[in-house]
Length: 322
Image (cartoon, rainbow, N blue to C red):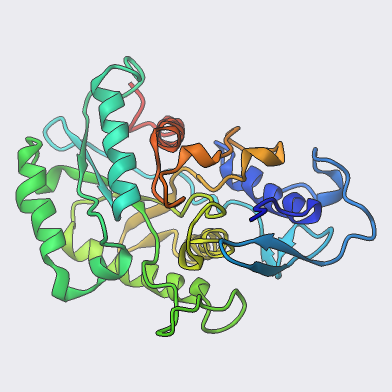
């Protein structure tokens, strides 16, 4: 299956990727016609297609406006949080499901191996509380409070930290349930039943739950999915991954703080297929070999890229700097 986007789609998607992937948040992106990308034909249709795992999925584009279905493609800038250590420790907890678990583990491994030696505040201690198969819906469900309990009562103490020392959270946010009961993927935005709106609601619920479970947290960095064009099933393909990034962007605009806790972008890790010849704003693209056999979970290639983007994003903030 040809997974390459048409030229017009790439220009629009890359405009988002460049703005959201840039190390420093921006309020806007250049218009498509002035972006430093291959020229878009003036007769390009306002609706083009992106290849999903099993079929062509229509993605309407607002040609020449720098928007996607009326949504702005600029990364929301929520400023910088105030993060203070507790007894000399700034605990950073990773939350999410399997991809987050693997990416956080790789990030911690690189820290331990000295890959970022001298580049991180030694007060920063990372705890991987992400759990395979347990996406945002599970963390939101009181019936799965054991996820929070295992993090705070087992993993945090095992790392030599106390619960009150958890000051920062990296939330690799993603919906697990993205299909109808029939197995058919939810319709794309702006359908009221699109994954976009489900994800927005889940983010709101999660923020309330996090403040309840981790009242000492001062800052939450949120990251959406990476590229889904290699996925072996529609429930993890495009445009779902792409649109969850847009939903998160809208949510952050509406929720720069929740219960006194700062919320902002973590690294923006969505990036196109390297075969396109373009990258996101962090200079990243993905090859098929960056993913495992299912095209969803990261192999070492994607883990390396995400770890570097995590480090680069956190390095913009005083609490993380040495």
